Amino acid sequence: MALAAAAEPAFVLQVVAPDSVRATLARHLDIQRFANLTDLDANELRRLVADVPAHARSLLGALGYFSPTIATQLDEAQPGNATPNVTQPPTVTVTVDPGLPTTVGSVNLTMRPNPALPDTTALTQTLIDSWPMPPDQRFTQAAWDAAKAQALTQLTHAQHPAATVVGSLADVDSDARSVALHLEIDPGPPFTFGELAIEGLSRYEATWVQRDARLAGVSPGQPYSLQTLQAAQQRLAQSGYFESVFLYVDPTGAADRSPVIVKVREARRGKLVLGVGGSTDNGARFSLEHTANRLPGIDWRAFTKLKLERDARTAQTELVSPLNSSGWRWLAGAKAEHLSDTTSTTRNQQLSVGRGHDTDHLTRRYTLQVDQSLTQPLSTYAAAPQLPDRAISLHHSWHQRSYDQLPFPSQANGLTVEVGAGMTLQPSRAPYARARVRWQALQTLADRSAGRIAYRVEGGAVWAAPATPVPDAQLFLTGGDQTVRGYPLRSIGVTAADGTVSAGRLLATGSIEWQRPWATDGQPSPWESTLFIDGGAVADRAKDLKARWGIGAGVRYNTPVGPLQADLAWGVHTRRLRLHISVGFVF
Image (cartoon, helix red, strand yellow):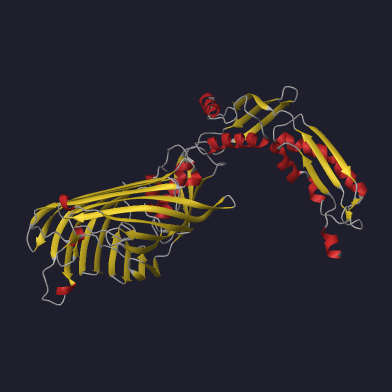
């Protein structure tokens, strides 16, 4: 009983008011802080009740109500009805009629002239055009504070990082229920970028930092922009040479050609990563990755990867040069892979050299490559070795992407276009051409709680004489987690009379998926459900393209590295269920 008595409140607060203000008053009235005091006597409680109207007026004023009617009532402690020996705590009742809300009557925005900016007319008009509290809008303290912050941010983010608010006033006319807003800002001088002042650099070249920054727009004499600084910071962070990057301009320093301070913490010259994982397509996976950020003598980066899976073994290396002044870099690579499926085994080798250009939303590549492929049915695998198909080709790829956020975008678009032409070298010589297009989109529905729709369309073609021995690496197969669910990886192709599946010259796939988030207590959770339809076909002739369909449902769980996906799909052609599990988001 002693514990129960100690838990009883010193008083009970009741707020009688319209819904628009009741929650704020009940949560923030100062008297509420004393409700659990065990030694609060009657005199102290009466004093607290007497202070309630003043504090309530302050809270209501912040909500835009400046002519409220407030009444308080204190009911002393009374014996309980059900248990007369137990005393019920006093009740404090606050009754509030907030009256009509106050609206904005007039707005006066002024800009203090600066010696470096004698004419502020255009700058002032820009703030007026974007001002978020026009006349006749309801006034609240929160909206007023946000409007002042927005005006200041608009200046400090674009050429005026030293801007400050020098005067602000909300002049309230309670009788007219109107407020006149006055705001005066000193914009300071317009800033321009100066030279980079780099701190923390020892392993890598300053010219690499300077090139990335200038390609993002940070170059001497250019107008200051926080967005440009952030773009340069992102480019440097994504370069792989740094663990952290921070760029800023000192707003208290000289405005003309202000030094851009770059603070970096360098990444190590080398990094080794071991990985384990798995997927329904290829079973257990082991990977070994090594990155050398600066090879001795040539300063190129080398990325080497070994991946071992149930049905695939891959070894590859890629060499990348530092950026030149135009943002281009040289690329060179080698790759070897051994792929197995239920009917055949394929060995591919590739050598490539080219140039690439990357921005936040666009990637371009020009590549000269040599491919060699050998596919053997399992039934003839032990027979005499065959000659592999070999070809040399020139390719151009263009990949554009846009998204509102990562790793969980709600709106996104991606388009990849690849075109190429080449010559087979073995076992015979003949020309061929190749093209591939892939489009993806993610669109949030008007009712956001209803989720999103994901679309995917892909098509590819190889043009060559019928007997041209184009390497399998240049042809097409589909099926699996990321293409046509309900079918094994690379299982949809050109099917021979003996049941073996080989790569084809034409590809067509498509998918539509409804992704709906789950809510917990009215709030979004990391879980989502999905319904989808996938389709795909591979053939050597257009008239032989026959779609294989997969339909199903799945769940998603949003992890820090992207969505973990588990899909159960029905292969309409095979009449079998197949589970697909993968993690990550690729756009």
